[in-house]
Length: 58
Image (cartoon, rainbow, N blue to C red; front, side, top):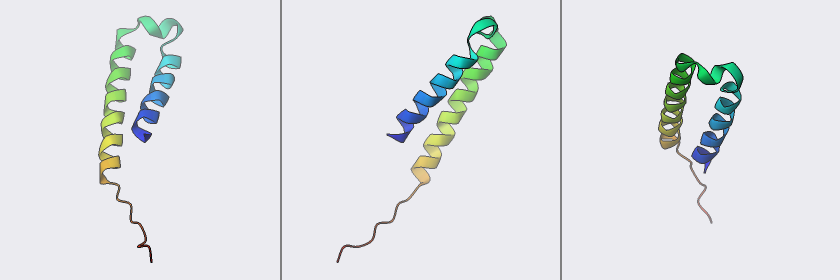
């Protein structure tokens, strides 16, 4: 669930960045898509490492 929220937030941020003159600059588009991919991989790895401990019910 949190991974899909991350994708929605990052897509919204890049949508705001790519408006206007930035939408035709290939360098900004390439760097933006690369950084979005790296951000997704880092989030996925950190979520897989997260371990939640629950209390034993009595």
